[in-house]
Length: 395
Ligand SMILES: Nc1ncnc2c1ncn2[C@@H]1O[C@H](COP(=O)(O)OP(=O)(O)OP(=O)(O)O)[C@@H](O)[C@H]1O
Image (cartoon, rainbow, N blue to C red):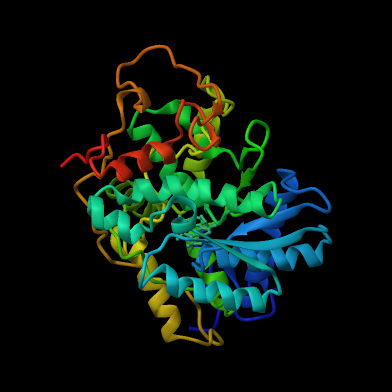
């Protein structure tokens, strides 16, 4: 078969079939289109202002590495005038985060950006290894997610930064929309679909410039730009419920590539119809619910992404290849759900009824933004410190 020509430049050989719309593009056009789309998201959502100091939540993984690389490129190309800093949270997971932080340290040199690392041990007196030693693996993602969101805010504050960007992508947002739908938690949709959260009530704003970027395209971008990223999954178990939502989405994507963006758009539309417009958002919660980091890895919850990464690695030079992403893999569905029981006052009512708007105050213990007397992190810490958590893990 003759090689396919790039539909954009009509000159070079196509090496990428875009997962998003199946357009066949050459390497340079794919990179240009990907960057242009992120630029469009940034400009149309008015994410930044000139001179703004922005912390990039950098985990060393593909999403935040691509985010750092693209933001550096766009900042220079379009003269955004941003002061970009890498902010990493060390959760204290040996054999995982210590390795990924080495990647972030190299990224800091490669992108010529300052790097700040903040550890759970210094902030909370606990590493995740110690948390897991105490509570076991089940439900640990909840602790990690709550602690990380607050740690990012605190890290930003020590740098006098009021805006943290994260590498959450379209797949992440679509998963969260589905999870909230499946839980019957429409009010949370507003926060989970917003490109920007915090900011007005909470003084650290968070945004997701890759909100409309497909995860597979992020992997392709990292591959074609030869970015240095860390691709091992967390050694502690991923969230079962998110993994199930992820598998569902990956299956939908196979039969209808636009499904991911369609779910994101539907989530945005439904959010506009719900009473919670994000004003009452607890600072610990980006609408994802009490449940973890959002990084249920494709390797465990629908392994076509892992396959894709492996096959890209086998073909280090894409020259002369058409990179088409297909997979016959059957996603592994995790059939149990990790649920952490919170004290009654912090659980959402399961009964239908009028939606209660939350009001933000300050945690009586640490002063962090909270819709409850005590913030989620302090509640979890209190349980850990007592070593007889009022928070029990459902078996
Ligand atoms: N330890 C961390 N330090 C700083 N930022 C983090 C950390 N963990 C996650 N983040 C931020 O939150 C985003 C979403 O995290 P998540 O755990 O869902 O990881 P992910 O989807 O695997 O992303 P990545 O590929 O960047 O690791 C990341 O892209 C990153 O911006």
